[in-house]
Image (cartoon, rainbow, N blue to C red; front, top):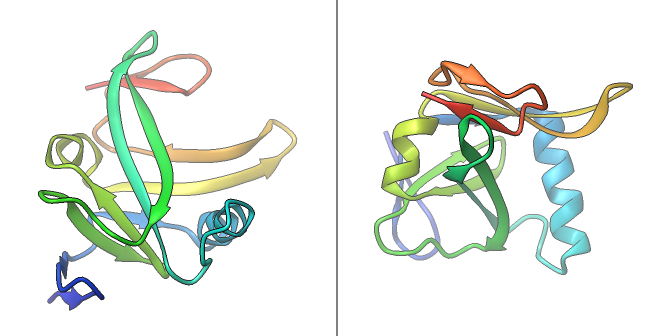
Length: 124
């Protein structure tokens, strides 16, 4: 099952999940960045770097995916992922932590075989 969004691209079934805490944090950030908190896109990806080989990329964008993006929607967040990153991120959960050990987004990635001590990079 898929859902059409405004620009007529199809939204694929869930491949990355966003927790309620993460969704709320993203909406707060979108508001601070002068984006509509009910109509923004979250670009999620990976790039080479870090001590384990790959680092996560999160960007708040206008709600307009680029050609070739995988488009997902979870917890009222439109997620855009390039096809290369999707391979590394399928099945990942994005959460938000505001506990004593730090504040920020946390990736629970079942594809990661190793991670650095600070949790900012991973390897497959």
